[in-house]
Length: 390
Ligand SMILES: [Mg+2]
Image (cartoon, rainbow, N blue to C red; front, side):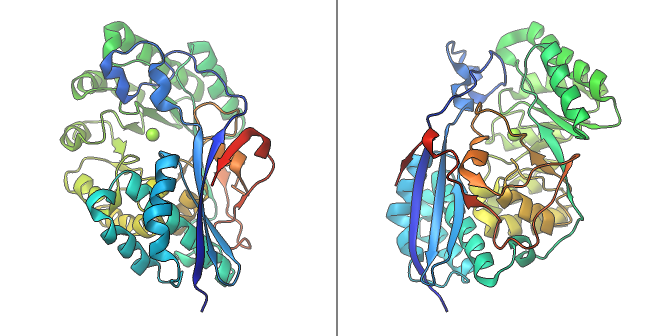
């Protein structure tokens, strides 16, 4: 038996070129404050955390997290690393409970659970490497030949620019598309019309035989969303994502009783958080992010619970840790996919830090049967564009 020898958390800060955001590219929770200036700041993050768990035998499992990386690093260094060092990496369920219960007072949501997620993902990658199998094989194996993906970008821009982007994605073979709203309550009726104009323009390009998902990133209010839903219904969205802030569970439930499926959960944490959403019929699609929700160990429990409710799970973000869970669960029908592009919002950093994350081809992606663990490695191809701490 090999034991855990060390845990190394590093913060990667992007210092390379970034694409400046256009105005109104996506609503967000800070819009309600009517702040001017860079109100999009809360939607951009240019840091990532890597968490390497090394076994005495020399293998290294790689985890990651993207929320508040400097705080998550501090939490891992001070609290979580000492709890797992010296332990057997295959005791993942015990180690998860140990990390959770020893820090419950402050760690059950937010930074603490994000740190648990990073360590847990590293443990699963390490287990895969130690037995020479991909993580999805450890989770139950292949439930689909390939994973269908949806194209997730289409930030609000001019109608012409959004139509051109959708046409380009369509030509590459994508069959489902997610777009972001640029206007919310502070923009009034005129902003509502700007939102609707763009949804209509996208339907003009992709037609009505393909899925269109719509995302407000918590930038709307319950009142505003209730006024928008009847206007959106004719465009047949597959879902409306995070219309209101993540804490407004009853708001989600009220909206989800309407004609448009409501999705959410990328800012919810742990099995208990999702039990609340499911008990309230608050969402029609669950979108946990494995590197926030409690890692692969928590995600598998949520998958089982969601399956019993027959609510599909479509994790937030692409990225290996989410793909392996999607491959291994019949109740995870598709994956989100961020097309590789220049560093803009921050999701793109995953491609710059890691190699091996699968690419979508003709609207599908596949996982390598022969790559042990999550199948990704820390890349040295872009080191010149990062400050790395730790
Ligand atoms: Mg989202």
